[in-house]
Amino acid sequence: QNVFDQQAPVNDLSFADSTTGRPWAECGQYTSQWWGVDLGSEVYVGYVRLQNRNDCCPERLTDVDIYLGSTAETYTGNALVKSDVSVLSNVMLEVEINALGRYIYLNRPSAAGLTVCKFFVFA
Image (cartoon, rainbow, N blue to C red; front, side, top):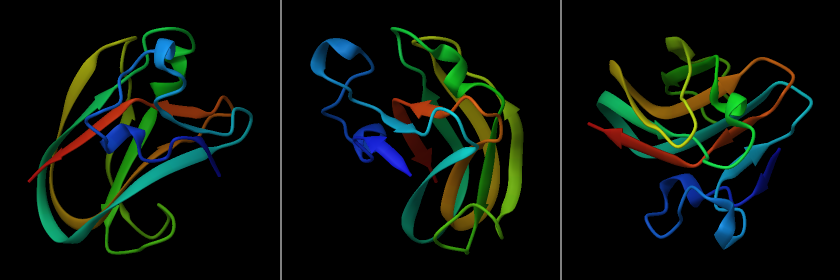
């Protein structure tokens, strides 16, 4: 379940701060959560960039697993392509993927929720 703006991480018009409302995708704060993107067709993903928020709760973009594959609806059933990715507060982190897939998901298996401000995929 996503709260706030599910599209904010892929919208160039939103920013990673709380002065303009809540321009990030945030999943439940107390359960294991995930967020994903349908790339439209199967593509070779070279790398992704993730940006964390710059106000509070930077831990919500730590220990994140990245999944890529052809299974829609949830990250399960897709290949784990990176694990334990952590992004510092207000930092844009580039993560090498080098894999083929249509659906890319972020999963934070801890019980503290997931927040992502920006997410870019580079094919």
